[in-house]
Every structure is written in structure tokens, then in C-alpha cells.
Length: 115
Image 1 (spheres, rainbow, N blue to C red):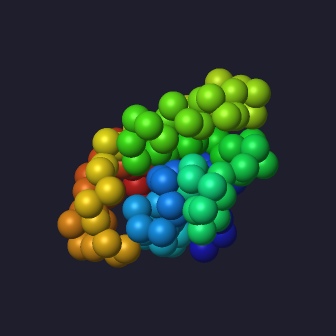
Image 2 (cartoon, rainbow, N blue to C red):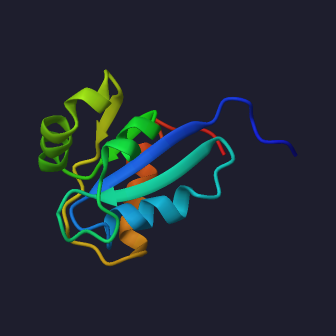
């Protein structure tokens, strides 16, 4: 089946880009209507959040309010009115933790319905 003509670029953001945002990236990577990536706000993140990533994204999904604040402060120009979603998911989960996966699906269902 061909890919949908309107694909949404979704950037998942947490602090270290080691647990929550890479889990979100992995579980939503198979969605045919989404192009996904992930990054971290901390300087020692696995994949550091950059203005290029912020510009690429149609929607930015942050795990905590502190991430939203950091993104807004550091990348105000690149944000340019982009939609930002805060999931309020604390840093209490391991990578690919079933409870985290369930929470991500539940919190994002209304924002990305479908597949």
C-alpha cells in the first residue's frame, strides 16, 4: 500500500534521549502516517535536540513541562507556532517498558488517531 500523501513529522523529546523519547520513536516508527525522530534536551543526550530537528518537526511531543520550557527558550525562532504536546510522563520507566508503551499509546491516541 502506498504511503499517505500527508505524513506528519513528529519529534519526541525527553532529557537524555535514552529511555522515554527513544521508546516513543520506536513504537510509533511503524505508523505509515507519521515520520518520527527523538532527541534530548540535556547536553549529554544520545541525540541532542537541535534547531534543525525542531524545524523538521510538524509536532513536538515532550515528556515533561520542563522539556517544553527548554524547547521554547532555546528554539523560539525555529518553533514558529508549531504544535507542542506535553505528555506529563515522569522519568520512571526503562527503555521499552510495557507500562511506558501503554502510557504513550493512551496519551497520544487523541492526538494521532488511526493505524
